[in-house]
Image (cartoon, rainbow, N blue to C red; front, side, top):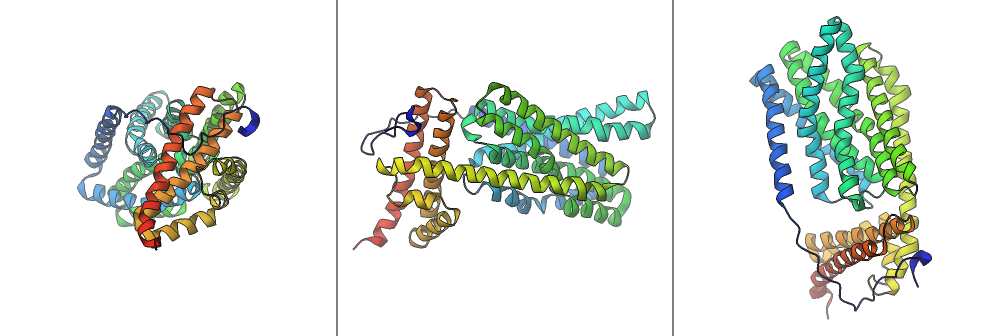
Length: 388
């Protein structure tokens, strides 16, 4: 029996699965070096223009809320967590490379506009048109890169929202260092507090909100059946991101942020949550269709498909093995849950005709290796305590 009638079923549990080839790491090392250099350049420029004390104050205030904000984004990704290395890469692209590119292009664009018109008009045009285009393009570039090089890790709109949120939070963190430092330099403590309330309390999720539109477009493109949708969806998402960003910046320049916040940004935020809810329902439906086949083939325990279809039961399973096998067992159970979810999403891609049979089988074998390793991992830790 095959799932959907077109693709081969999982290999029997007793059948061996070939080992994966070792990964090259030079690309990761090169990216880390580039990110570090870009980050040092941006922070160096801010420190030189603001002075030591304002810079330290700005950096501190920008860093403090980051763990909480990142946790808020990752709540959306609990059902099918993305690889940590890709999430870290995405965040630091926003905080370093994207911030440096935007700083150079925005500054250059503003200087050019000031040669063509007065300073006030130049600042308004740069803030409401130039900066949104530049910043949303450089933030979205890393998600587009994941779509091109790690398509199997971009499984729909939720993944797009998560990666968009992370790159935007990294970008906003570095941008906040700039704004907080400038506020401390020119406005003293009252100016710093006012800027922190506006950016860190009142609107910390605005950058993720803008870029989420791009992420949704790219996430939909990753699972779209038609080639036209793979072009139109990301394009529409980017245009919406630029429009939202430009609207907010224009409102800030004209002192209309309350109206725009309540009547545009808040409804858009609710809409994004609705998109995430609908997508999670879709994933649960895939799990109910695919996982029983793997249970019958011996790769999953008989009761595991039911556990894997429920977020509550997943948490209970992790808590159960943690209580009996410690943190390592809980991590192995988490990996087991992720691998099973990825198998269901793999079949969804196959049914959408995005994979040829050879690619499907290769990816299936890779996920089965992960599934088996994770299952053996938590079972080996539980066995001594569950034995006679």
